[in-house]
Length: 127
Image (cartoon, rainbow, N blue to C red; front, side):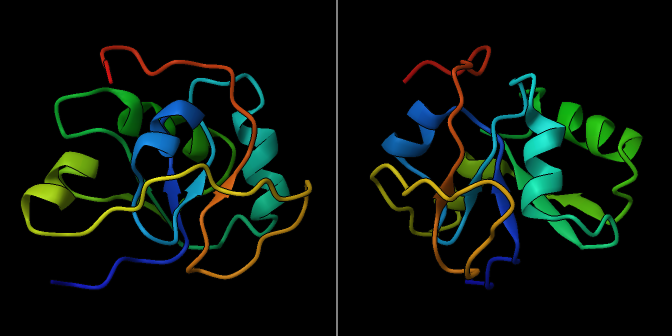
């Protein structure tokens, strides 16, 4: 099983993160109005290489995130192939539980899930 990239951003809702997420992922919901503000607070250097993941390759959230991040000047962004479902299908483990909140502007450790409050729901992702 390959290692997960770091930093790894779960762009689904906080509810989705609580149900399951990839180890070490940071939760910043792509459909929240403050998505880019939260990205900038956690990763102020737009040259930081970021990896985002959504539910799977058939859903839109990863493409939306790439577009928003590119517009905001983040050019070193990639998606995790297959998203959450692809990772699980390849035998990758997931964690279940809400991640602790991190104060704005701080980012800690690649192996700790961090949750930013998100009141959005991911379209098409019923859990």
